[in-house]
Length: 87
Ligand code: SF4
Image (cartoon, rainbow, N blue to C red; front, side):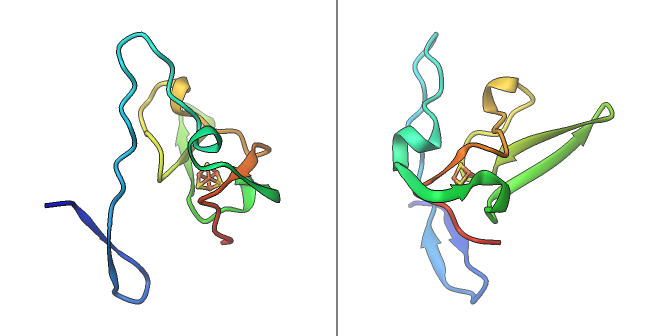
């Protein structure tokens, strides 16, 4: 059974699993997986997460991989992916 997530209205939708990178390969970006949204950046997306650690901010995407590795950092000025949702 697939894991489910609740939206703000209480509706349940299945959580999509991203393809796992094979050993030694880089993660694909959300833009490569889902395409892009013209005129938007990650900075204004509701899926952007800010993590504060060691006096620095690190930005992650809640729909993508999250780890302490910089390989999972995203940049605020990245062109938004196809999963963009306005805050
Ligand atoms: S635009 Fe895409 S990659 Fe950027 S924060 Fe939103 S969902 Fe994540």
